[in-house]
Amino acid sequence: MTIWVDIINPSHALFFNSLMNEFDSDRTVYSVRDRAETVDLVNLFDLNGVVIGRDFRGKTRKTLNMIYRTLNLYLTVENFDYVFSFENGMSILVSKLRKKKSILFCDNDLKFIQKKSLFQDVETKIKSLADNIVIPQACYETFKKNINPDKIFTYNGFKEDIYIADYKPDLKFKDEIPYDDYVVLRPEALGSFYVKKNESIVQNLLKLFLKENINIVYLTREKEDFEYSKDFDVYIPKKGLNGLDLCYYSNGVLTGSGTMAREAACMNKTAVSFFPSEKMLSVDNQLIKEGKIFHSRDPEEILDYVLSKNEKSEKIDLERCKRVKEEVVKITKNLFQKKIYN
Image: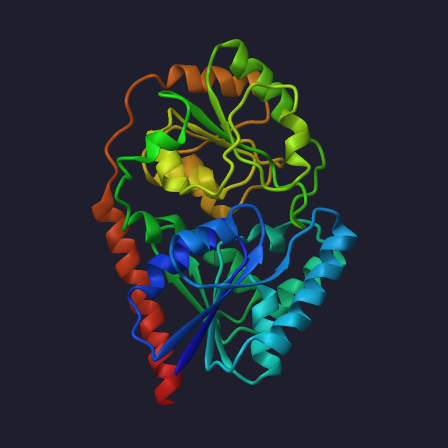
């Protein structure tokens, strides 16, 4: 029994590194998309992933590249019996074409809510072809309106809990950073299909935070992100770093996307999302409601919030994260074994 895992984003490397440690399969093979720190993290975890394709920012180029990558996956990934992936229509289409089974993990219900692009519509329909879909309970109501509920399995927590459950701080990590105190800043994912606005507030944030002598570790996702920081004194890591270590040792995490804010929130760190929309993922709305994520598109409001959070963060509740991981592992193993023996 061979499981194929296709990893397309940095957080997915952490997610599957944690999840697959709990699996006993005859063989697990990995493929990886070259995007941001994804390849570096796959190598850091010794997953031996084969790099197939990369990502682009422009919508047309991005669409064509995803089609091209799907074809490459179909032609080059060796024989497998099951595919595991996260928010990944490419691997689901390949599994269907090769008549194999699939489990898809998701947490982004915003794609169902907002006005979508044609390609995003197609991609969502392809994802719905997965044999089973595992999602946080927070986004169940939206998913069940758009996907056959019989395929959906939920857990009480967030995908970030799964890999935070295994987290142990790297005591040498601070040697990688030129600061004793810093905040992490990651730009908006303006190249993603589900992001409708095309305006960044990153330069205004950089200007305000540096004026307050706050050190910044700046994480680029796409080559265009370098343009925002070219006139500012920030630290840009030369290689992919473990985002959990970045969160743990930081004084706060500011991101225009969702994952790093949720990681920080689940670790009881100061977490700010400046996601470019009033409509948010349900998982983000849940953490905002709980007061664990602060959302704003006002740079001065964000600065004031971070400055107000001078108190030390609470200790990471690993027991809660472990309970979430145990639930997800149990669901996944049950689905996997059911398909094998049926």
